[in-house]
Image (tube, rainbow, N blue to C red; front, side):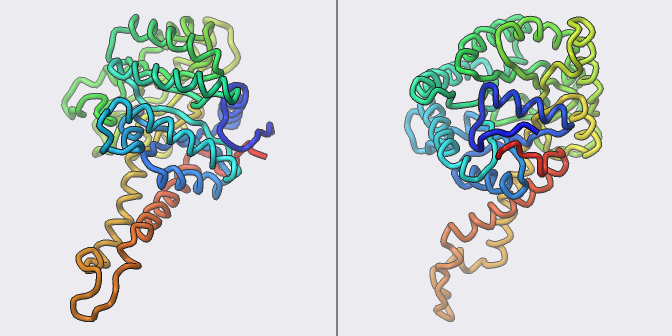
Length: 356
Ligand SMILES: [Zn+2]
């Protein structure tokens, strides 16, 4: 088994991580974070499971990291992502695991966000000889295919010299992620939720000569957790996309690096099937948001007076130990770690860290 230095991975080490996951039939959870507390919970869970992990920020998560009070919202989205990345660069190696640093969905309106992050990334690269982020995502799946691919090609040209990877999206993931993507319409014609293998082939032909990329293909996956049954997960779309490229370009098996969006609430057998077709990354956000908040909700409802009075109005008992935010945020982190323990098992990555 290849061994890597613990900490943030990029370039050749990133490719080693992806190749090991595909060859070993496992995937890494990609967790959306918005605070130092959630980042630390992800690092703690990865360390406990001896597993590598992907930490990602949406534009909204990045803005929250910088602070909702910052007047210039665009600046906050950029600086919050940079601040979170620096936090991970500083701490990850001390948890003894490999971490991929990534930014989530950027639609057409957020291309300037990605470009601003690349400007920071170029400065960081000059100083440290490695990129600030391992990868970014461009999600232009709601735009015409030609615009999607030409913009992805343009951005990938800028990322390749920084040893960075680009995640693209083909077909539309249902549901909504931080304001991106439409409402999930239970009665809609769902054909747009399924990527066409011919589109994946076209992307492969355009992008693979430029640099490294991965594909979030839609196979009925939906952001968020909805009542099951109305959208059918069809992982065979991933298999067919791999097969088409293998056949046309005489590549080795599973030439594509695939990403599974909307992993929360998915059936475990479908997850395993998708992973067997070359999915190396599965995004989990909703389930972890719930785990984090669930623990706080439970604590507050068990200790309601501590959140109404600093000292008990009858007994004068001080409640400081209860309302100190570290008390309930720690419970939230522990519950997030517990939910991540499950994810590492479901994705087969428990015990598979390449860090040495
Ligand atoms: Zn997504």
